[in-house]
Amino acid sequence: MPSWAESQRLLERARHTIPAGVTSNVRAGERPFPLFFAHAAGATLTDVDGNSYIDYVLGQGPMILGHSHPAVLDAVERAMRRGQLFAGQHELEIEVAEALVRLVPCAELCRFGVSGSELVQAAMRLARAVTGRTLILRFEGHYHGWFDNVLLNVATPPDQAGPREQPRLALGSAGQTASVCEDFLLLPWNDLALVEQLFAERGHTIAAIMTEPMMCNTGAIPPAPGFLAGLRRLCDQYGALLYMDEIITGFRLGLSGAQGRFGVTPDLATFAKALAGGFATAALVGRRKYMERFAQDVNHSGTFNGNVISMAAAAAALAELERDDGALYRHMEQLGTTLIDGIRSLAQRHDLPILVQGFPTAFHLSFTELAALHEYRDYALHCDKERYARLKVALLKRGVRVLDRGVWYISAAHTADQIAQTLDIFDAALLEVREL
Image 1: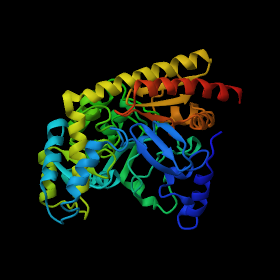
Image 2: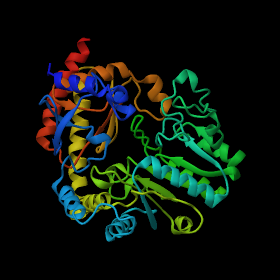
Image 3: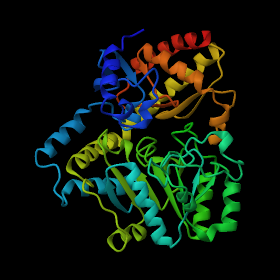
């Protein structure tokens, strides 16, 4: 068992000035408790007690190039010595926008912000302005940020979710107002027949369909064959906009995002986590005829939008990802496939009901008897989360860090040796979990 004494000491100190000792509620419930970290490089993270971990959390996804990537850090250092914030324009903004337009199918114009949560708001505002409608269709288990009007039905207890075919809109936090539910419609993910039925009844009142193109936070659930294409067809038929929240999938599932991987082009899309190699930035991109409204009557503002540091990081990160025709993606896909295959083999050898699904650069691991997860209720009702939590701690004790909710991320900095080491550790961790 590693010593985490210094992390415990710092957590107690933090609790005197920071609620729960953490600055994001997502970190508050980490097991065995929230750790403090000292430095990171490549695919390795080191805590304040000197324990090192092969990292599959990767900052909740942004560190697609690995930690402390020299190309990103050097670009930021060079740029910030010329100034950090101008309250005006600079050339790096254009460079990043040009890269997005070149790489992302739906990107004809771009706007930048600081966080994914912000740009989700901009996308919804734009969709409502374009259509003159207010209702937005969203799906159970999808996460679109922590703001009052979107923190709905992300992790609703099944006994409070209502009937599957008519889910109940549910607030995610104390302090939200129930009135926000009036602007949304809710359905289960991956059931096109239900979406078609809803549009037949109310399609001309719907401004947009808001969807993760792959349901990343909850189960790494891919779209069913034809599902995204069906959403595209319905939006075209009824005059709604198709908005893909690619905060996680963007530049993680490939250079063209999930929309490129799945071959369905939305009207609007948002990007954030992997966009800038670990620095805080986000982008809303979309078709020119819609995005031009920001130059007319739709407000989108922000002091730190397009700041020098974020744009320098994004330009450098995208250049690395594009290098040699996306060679880093081939590397990540190979390593991720090896890891997934190895986990499945070990699960079979230990006779444990482990499901791994998703893609090599972002996949989900769960204890379940199901052959696949198709929607939120599969995850909520049929996955043994307590057993996975024990596995997570068993891995952490042995030097592998993963997310509590079961999502694993691969970076370009992971090596074949680290994958092999991870599988050895996973083997030992399964023995411990099996004995409990």
